[in-house]
Structure formats: structure tokens, C-alpha cells
Image 1 (spheres, rainbow, N blue to C red):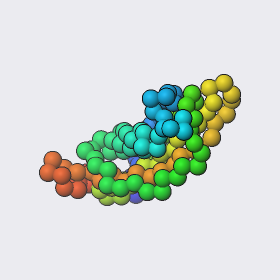
Image 2: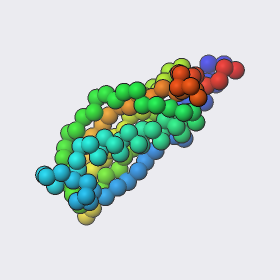
Image 3: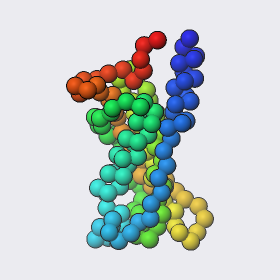
Image 4: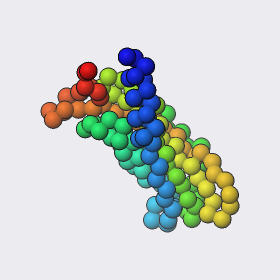
Length: 136
């Protein structure tokens, strides 16, 4: 029985991976001509929410973020890809890891430049925590 649940969770994780690509235009940059950190965080929160919702198909709220690491500035005129994947599943909560990959428009290759974790809780119509999976 437990292996069936694990297999279901593994399949739901794979099916919920979310990828969004964007071009860094001047409207999203700061005075250094690099992506504004707040914009990156908003994009990451959106991708994590989509990933978590695709996984659970429940109403969710973001309860925390952690370990947001900015390792390299993202210049205007580049492409980024945000990738979200569920990394932890609890009874009422789950964690989504989101990475932002940077690539130059005119060169091959890409590198991970931002990584973070977003924690969600499934809630019922009254805003109270509810199980991610219905008991069998």
C-alpha cells in the first residue's frame, strides 16, 4: 500500500514540474541594468504556486520562503527560465524548489543563478489546513 502512495506522489511530482521562460527587458531592471530582485521573487512565487497547485489541485497559501540564493546578476537582454518542482510533501503542506537559469540570447549554455524554496499549506473554504490527499 505504501509503495502505491509513493508511486502516486512521484508521478504527481513529475506531472507538476513547471517551466516558464522570460526575456529580461528594461522595464524589469534596476539602476544597475539587472533584473530587480523583487521581480525575480514575484516570478518565483508565481511558478511555485502553479507547481504546487498542479501537484495538489487544492486551494493553497504560501506560508514561507527560505534559502533564496542570488548567485549572479541577471542582465537586461538575457533569457531566464524558471523551473519549479515539488521537493517535499507532508500531510497538509508541501515545499516547492524554484530555480532561475540564465542564458545569453546569442550563446549556447545556461547557468543556475537563483534558487529558493517556497512552502505552502492546503486550506479549506474557511482557510483552515486540510489534507493534501483524501484518506482512502
